[in-house]
Image 1: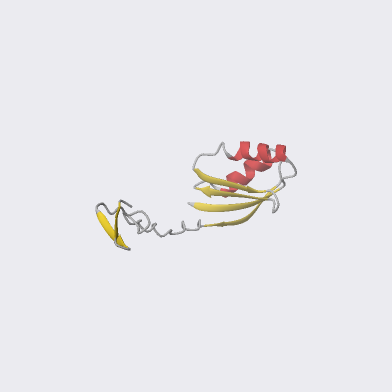
Image 2 (image 1 turned 60 degrees about the horizontal axis):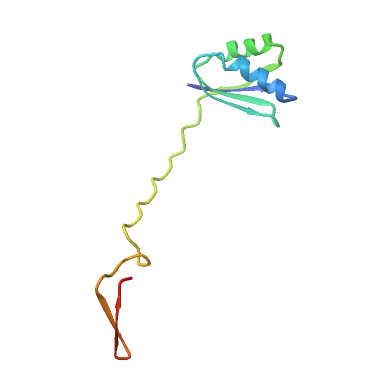
Length: 109
């Protein structure tokens, strides 16, 4: 697995579509990201960076390899804390009796 970052010329939506059409034909690609503002294409997978660049250039687009390296490991997320079965606001007390001013009240909630 490699993370390949290429500098590409993306001027419009058609340029982006054509670029993605060329790149998605490769096998061994796990993730593709295009940054229009920076003009970069990021590909994560087992594809050869030189073949990828050559194919993009053959399609008429400018492409230059910026970096090739290992992808970032996925961020470890803490498992969510299990919720308690019941909280103080929703506990049901059946048969509880409260005495107030000599009156007896039965409360279900």
